[in-house]
Length: 356
View 1 (cartoon, helix red, strand yellow):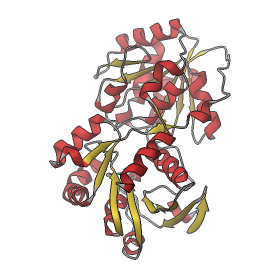
View 2 (view 1 turned 45 degrees about the vertical axis):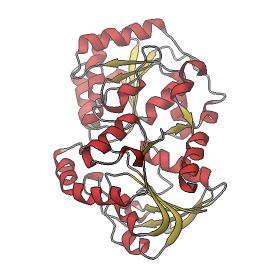
View 3 (view 1 turned 90 degrees about the vertical axis):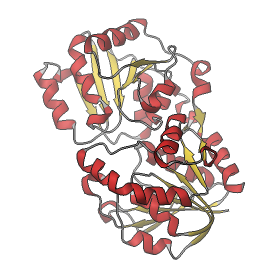
């Protein structure tokens, strides 16, 4: 098959949940099919044409106010010129998915990664203006892929879609990546957060709760975003600045080691369509605490993953974290395997959709 994947990643920049999703399925599909990716070129710093891990990549200049929506004049013009067996576009909250409907193809598939609203006043206002455009794209799609049951319900409710048109295929994890990784003794216990530094992600709650935890507990924050300055200043004011460590753009192996070394992984996000970081933490055998919201609720089992309600009660959160830290539990594959798919299985399910 000749398959076109469309998403604002460049195939050089990874790290976001959707970016990891697209990269992982594209390279695996390329082992058996002819795969092209139309991506974007942040500040023109990458080649216009390139082959990356067997994927033919073509990049386009774009405009992205507040690091969102990713509008390109070049991309829709190029899409009108091409024809593929399958066009698979990703990311409802950015223009490339919607432009992808311009390409000729036998089957048009979209994976929305839909949150339901924007995550700032600016983004939410654009999101509301965007809705008629988005509804049109979803109606043109032959199949809509949701990564959780929560996302499917949200899509069907917001856009009045036939539930049979929406197929749930969760994100995956490359389980082979975790082979050979062993937990290191570092002389402290760590609470780990991985993700964008945004208010809706709830990372600021972890800085607020840190003074209530033992002095041998540190907070490790992996990611970048507009909230970093606030987090650093707030940690200093609370007297825990020396116990908060920031990392960004970690090599993949170092990030996986962070998951393995962590005592507990915490994500208190208000909106998630799935959460690959929770899947990766579980694959590393690390217990998780998540907000009892959106698709995060689907992870909660009271065994490997535990839920807390929003708004956050810091005393309760501190007690919860301490109880997990005291237990010092790490668990094996048997405890979480039914919750986490390998990327090979994700790609197999997508291929069945492409061929149906």
